[in-house]
Amino acid sequence: MIVAFEAANSFSANLDQIFIFLRNWLVGFLPAAVQPAAAVVLDVIAIVCVFPGLFALTTVFERKGLGRIQNRLGPNRVGPFGLFQPIADGIKSLTKEDIVPLSANALVHFLAPLVLVVTVFMGFAVLPMGRNMVLVDMDSGLLFFFAMGAATELSVFMAGWSSRNKYSLLGAMRAVAQMISYEVVLLLSSVAVVMISGSLSLPAIVAAQNQYSGVFPHWYIFTPWGLAGFLMYAIAATAETNRSPFDLPEGESELVAGYHTEYSGFKFALFFLGEYLAMFSISGLGTTLFLGGWSAPFSFLQFIPSWFWFFGKVMMSIFVFIWMRGTLPRLRQDQLMNFAWKFVLPFTLLNLLVTALWHFMGEGWQRWVVCSVILVAAYALMGTISLRGRHIGRRSYRYAE
Amino acid sequence: MSPIFYLLAVVTLAGALATVLLKHLVHCALAVTVAFAGLALLFLQLDAQFVGFAQILVYIGAVAILVVFAILLTRGSDLPKHGVFSSTWALGLAIAAAVFAVLGWAVIASTHGIPQQDNVPSATAHDIGIALVGRYVLPLEILALLLTAATIGAVIVAMHEKGKQQ
Image (cartoon, rainbow over all chains, first blue to last red; front, side):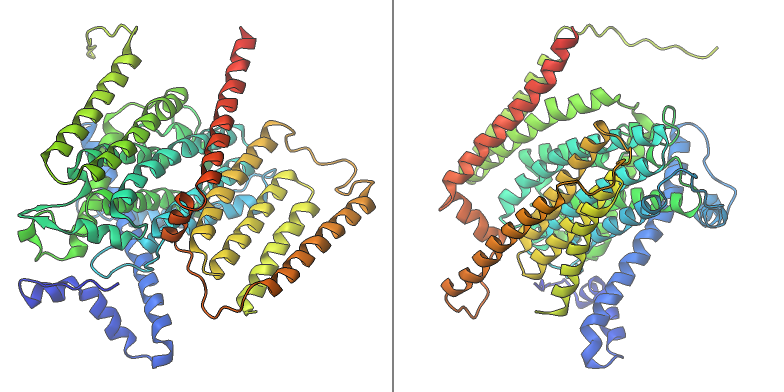
């Protein structure tokens, strides 16, 4: 569906749709019969160029950010402030020898990174990156996204098993167990959004949030159930992409490198690319579901293009991922699984009930109070019950002499 | 019958044949995943979006992983010593042919009963949702009971092992 746009002036409307105009202009050079196919091909080329470019930027961002959190500088030799480091990394990974263990299962070993990157790229097809800027507007777009995420788990297993290495296999089993557990949480926290929007199509969900009462937007994160759902979605997203504090499957201090131990050269670069692209894609979905997608935070800021807001929100989410990686210690495997099944999942189910209550109570201040009280009380109760019987003393510090 | 249908049928059949003919069990599990993917694409080609994506989500995302875990945790990766064909293959062939005959008869006989429709019936997620809580609410509740029983059974099996060790 094409979203109409009444802009303050036509310049901001043109800037907003500039990529659409560019694509239509380029496609206009071709004969009319191939124009639809050429438009799709151009869209795909755009996605395949933009997101790996953002990946390159994010690797520098992450290493500098982690460095600063750990009181050091990060890469600063290649280019100004180390900004050309990804080029050096790319050249390095292309020129390294591609080692395949002799007893490894060669075909599956080769296919695992391919399956990962292909399924992760497919997830980008349904994300609305700006007004009218979605590659495929499917009725069940959200379901398609989760289906691609489920296929990702298989590639992780393929990589770990085919390497014929006990550390890889152990890492792969842990990764798959973790991803399955948190996928349930991811799905259930998204169901709340589907319940309120009434549609599985992602552009429709963004359109439902693109309304303003006065100055403030109707993003779902600004509602009690939306905030709870967003927090649980964020936890599940961190676990799904194997990021710290859930990165035991690639626990660098225990498992060498987990399921991608036996991969070198460009195949390792593909795994790295796949992991970061999964981070972008899941942040993009979280932005679409809870943070209003491409809509502006205040109604007077709508002159700024929609794609700027979408990518800005995604990069803010990536920044929070990097921040969490530098700050929080790693969770042990059983702590991770306990947390998912015994705390987050019941809370997700309660969130569904609260969402339904929010919908049926109708407009007014009562629903805000009731929903917030239920969620906060449940959180406090579950926290108290889990912490009962544990003696947590005062925090003590040991400084290096 | 469009060329895409034939291509997808070839992919599905190749996956299914590879599942029964390959020697290494984990290869067979991956081949059955290809067969599931072929089925999902056939559903999507028939414009049944919800069923197609649910097939990917459930079969490839959960059942295939379950099969693979089961293989790893039980038999391991030792190759079969006597080849992949069992000694009673003639009886198996007869039973498979009988099942195929019954299914083929059912499909061909059913096309006479359906009235000629020009437009494809809509099967969006919205329609499926309304059907589930309207006409098919009893099967939905029975499914819920079944899933609850399965979950409780899984918890009991896991707990029982812990009790035995003590």
